[in-house]
Image (cartoon, rainbow, N blue to C red; front, side):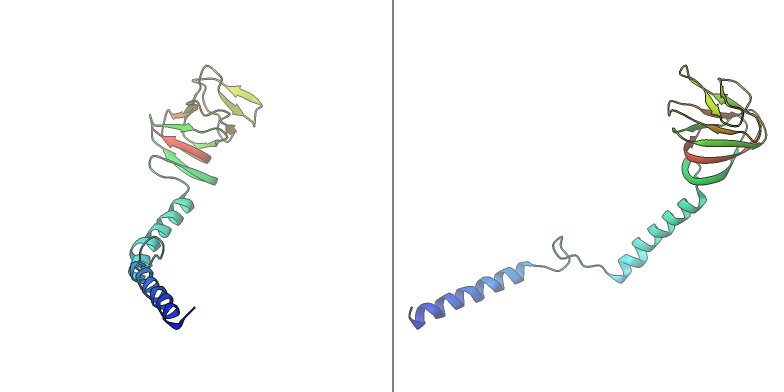
Length: 152
């Protein structure tokens, strides 16, 4: 190969490399740029919100608690639970919300509590199936809840 052809190949390689580099803009999907203001204004507040939600174990519309959390349920309000949710009535009065498939398991007494049954105080209740089962407050009550639920 003569010097002229080698020089032409090298020149073409340099031009192609320049084209590739000029189209690789920083900040696109292939090369994301994370700025300090993005971290301060977006990421950190999101992390704080996530931590607050996890620590509180509840929200106004429901929540999911990995440990027992205290829930104040006003008269007439209902807590509808997902399967495996655990409930303990600490104060007030409440009734069982059951379905035609069954009620809530009272592990303290070793019984299935049917629809409309008064919730016994300080008994551990477990919701076996997520089909609309839960508890309705007859009077304002305080519950300890562990697991996923929604308040209606």
